[in-house]
Length: 311
Image (cartoon, rainbow, N blue to C red):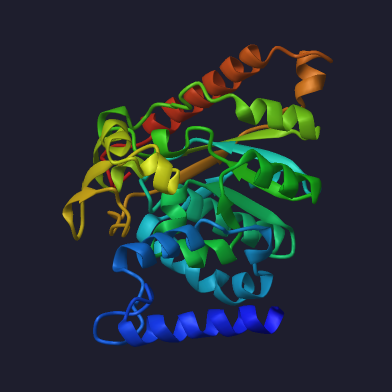
């Protein structure tokens, strides 16, 4: 019976091949290639699968000096207070976020962190999916950039890594230019729970200048919902900005050439949440206290600037 079944299947396969009914075959007799749209989806999904193993200390070591030189020239990057980060062990760095898909604050801080602590210290940056799908995504993954998720963050902290998280994510990074000097986490309190569950200190990191690298117009959340991007790519926004070389840039999927705005980053004092707020801390109070202190620091950094881009 097994041989009879195999023979029948083989004969059916031969008949389909002869009469062109095989769905894999084109009318010209060749196998169909996957559609461009399907290949695009597959490539995007592949870029969203970055994990902790993608970080490559040897790659960072080989490219750190040149990358820092370029960032210093283009963004005139300045990072203050790096000594406030605990010298070892897991720590949750909580930052405000600016600059669209090409986020100069992350680039400058990541280079400074690896320079200060050395490439062997595990350090990961959680990023929105738009960043991972951009042309610089593969490069950033080797520096430790992974898809923003509670699971990735907890896995890294459990491995004694330093983790940089941006609670405002895609919402804050694409806020309109006229809201440049505003901390906007959109009420996202997950970082508080993460730090408490993992038992790690929070170190606020405040930056200014990133939102001057383009003219940001809208988050585009309604457009993203209309196009079902959340279902396809887990993208809740479809931002629109004015930037080079596209002029009108919708989605920022291909990134853009950021204007050479001066980026200044300030590391604040570490916070032991249970020591400061007790054994059963109020998450809302912690959120309000941290965002308020970061807003005060951002206001101070903004007050130092005289002109957009020039700093």
